[in-house]
Image (cartoon, rainbow, N blue to C red; front, side):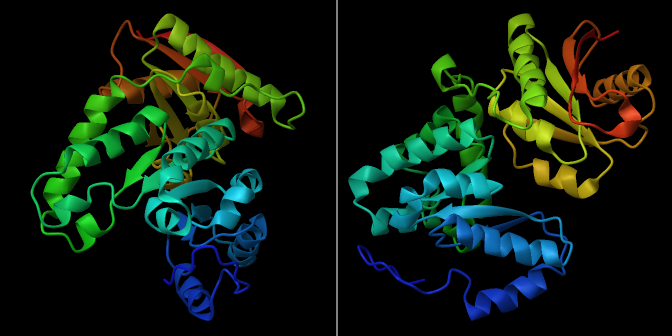
Length: 318
């Protein structure tokens, strides 16, 4: 790409080559499509229409790397399914000293709107050639965790770098260690809005996360056909894992990006009680929970109608 700082351009977000590439992409079982140089929510809506037209389930990530995107950030986040903080281009397009504050603001807004957010580009750039990151790069990765990002991304470090395996191992160690210190403060935690069409479901998800924290639950269990429960519960950043069950493989694959979510295939949706027993047994088999652990079950009743989440139950594993 070509960067033109302090310059407004009128070129379409999707170039001719992008449209050719998109045709191929939509023949593949991809879960997420990232759109570069997004300038307005219209760019996202245009891509979504093209995806929907062919009946593909892929969700859209908006790469934030233009000043125009910062000016329309709230609307772009709302229009998107996820956000990527593209630190490399953003640091060129805008004054570099503004980048840390912009990154923090984007992450906070994504948490509020229940959109997964990825922090990307030059996270561990030194490891393109060296076997260890700089202390500053360790802080880059750690800060993304402490801000509450869903994921961090490597690019050149693994695509052309000399130590692709080592850089993944190093980043993973930093993530696991830093996560011990992460806690979303109450004033940054999303609060369900009565104006939302999903208010009642949001309240159930909010209280599932709160109850899980209050009782020290091992996990929150959700059943989903759209992924909404996972996105919403995750946005409250509970102190435990969120275990999601679905009979749709593409949904499970999509949700692997989302903060704290672990996915399991399940297709025996019968009665609520039987389903809770089944998913608890699956979690025990996978050593995610053990006898005596507390889990918070969420779901919808009646189950066969597959409504939005409207039920919460505290379960002690037997």
